[in-house]
Amino acid sequence: MKTILCFGDSNTWGYIPGTAARYERHNRWPGVMQAALGAGFLVIEEGLNSRTTVLDDPTRGPGRNGLTYLGPCLDTHAPIDLVLLMLGTNDLKHRFGLSAGDIAVNITALLSTIQKSGTGPASASPKVLLMSPPHIGPLTGLADIFEGAEGKSQQLARHYQQAAAQFNVEFFDVATQVTASPLDGVHWAADQHTRLGARMADLARVALGG
Image (cartoon, rainbow, N blue to C red; front, side):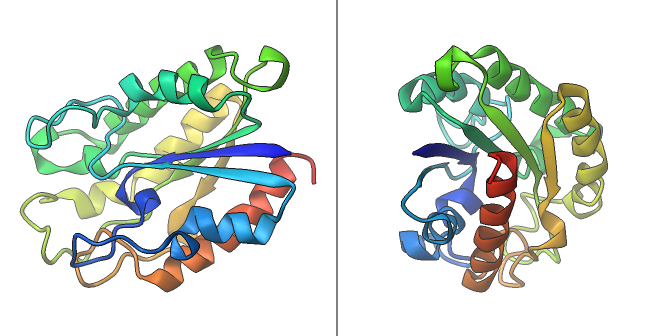
């Protein structure tokens, strides 16, 4: 049995655009991935609305800082064969004032934590696949929160790819597969979850050697 941890934000949680509701597990991309991979794999879904890379968000209360939760999360689910890491969208919020390069620096703190965790098989490091989030926009209902984020989101993949190379981990640009819903410009329609889940199943098989 191969264990895969999906660590992300509301788009891993399964937030339905324009609502506060959640897709059923079989519609969320980790659930789609689980169905595609089958019984030899365990896909663990660790998504949380408004989760950032390393930032505390005073408007959402405690627990949104991905770095502070990541270590205990890894320990909880060990041994882990592969971590799929997709964060950074919430770092683009106007209140944080970060550039795409700043966010990529933040993501390296999480990559370092994973690689130093010893939570893989035989106390080694889990393999990692770093996922650059899809582009934001056009913004509608969340325009004030994500003011100025559309252009920055298009720069993330370049910086994330450099971070992945620095840590010698796999990289995938989710924007090549997923487009945000026009209902809010941030979250995804169900068919986008289906597309990503199928693609990540293929990439996970390759990362884990078939």
